[in-house]
Figure 1 (cartoon, rainbow, N blue to C red):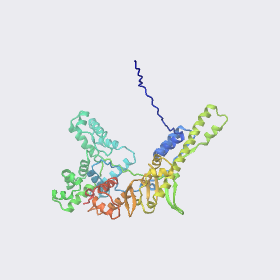
Figure 2 (spheres, one colour):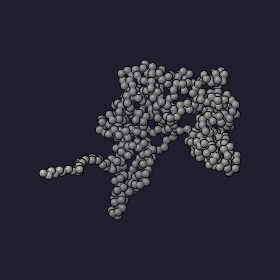
Figure 3 (cartoon, rainbow, N blue to C red):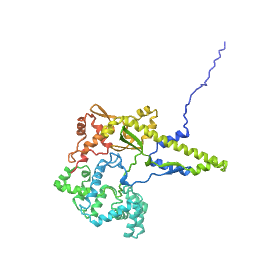
Figure 4 (tube, rainbow, N blue to C red):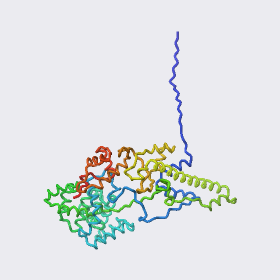
Length: 479
């Protein structure tokens, strides 16, 4: 008997792929909703260049005096700081930036020198000359040696955004084919131009150069920087007093002299001006939400091209092109209207959720999730996220980014839950009221928060403090 077996190695798979195709209108809505004001202006300009039907009118420019600053940033905050920077350097820079302007004249700078520096800084800030060009012109007055100028240009080409030199001198010497002593000589010349200190390696060297230019190279302040910079950066004033056998008043005078110095060679003040797109205000019948249309570019459809489209004398090919552009312009206008209405819908939900904030201020922010608002509005969470990111709203307590109204639960006050943003405002206010000579530790802040029925771990307090860019207590301590 012969047994026959049949086997097959073939297998069959059935899969269903579901795809969602967005219309041109939907796609444009999502793109525009994700744009902040700067990006939106640029996008509209690009559209107007490609579409003859579009006319984009910019809002009338306002002076900085009429501008608004984002709530929560004050003169002591430094938005440009990176999280990975050394906290000791942040402490030094913080002290310098607070004291430098008001202390220059007191510490012996001649009025003529102050005026010359102010004129030079104004020239740099107004953009009439790049700082590198200013320095090169000064160097040409000191040396006609082409080798010196080549080295100076190479140093200026390797500066970071703050004006510090980033390349090892030995490497630059090899690249230029000169002895390292020559590079050091040129670097020293460059550091003593105006602005002073450009081309220094680090903050310590920059501070010493400024003291030297003031004729204070042998002062107590210079000695502290040369021999005990780490202790100074850590605010270890007790160690400094013992090491140099100083009285408290002598140390205070030396520290104040160091703090009168500029914190960065190429420092340029950056003012963060915010233009709100919406406003929440108290009306006759409760809280009202309004779109500030005067702050936005106005998009109009040009009537001359509409007439050309309707003109029976227009040939078929031209009419087809015009019709395509007209429909594109109409789609853009409708998309802009949808973005505005979506932002208003989200803000009305914010008003319902954050009434305590509107009455009492940032410390009363409640924990609200974007996905919860999205569910109530029958929108996706990503749509709500796009509607909030980079958009600002004017409130009775200042101007806030819309994302500020959302956040996870982080504590409570009298049985009421608070958002992380609200807890941070409480921490900020506690630290603002502390004695600078005896700043509160994170454990002390924890105790003060418990008095307000806000229970957080010390680690969480440190996390909130870092988010506020507030230094630890031992680095906040004043002399």
